Length: 43
Image (cartoon, rainbow, N blue to C red; front, side, top):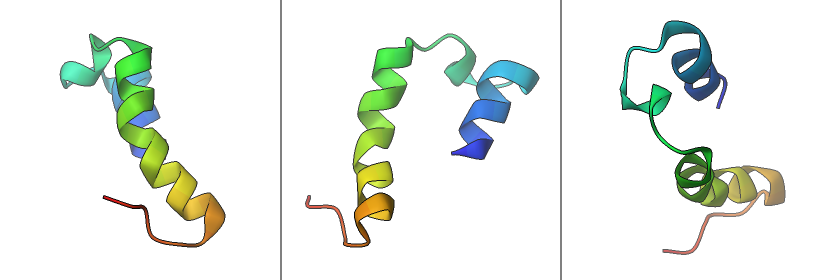
């Protein structure tokens, strides 16, 4: 997650810099929920 933030706001090297925040959140939400809950994300 730190890498996503650094890429999006500091480096601006990838398409993350231009991607809408909602799209990024939709992609990262399952990963974050899995880490926070301590169980694997469902497919």
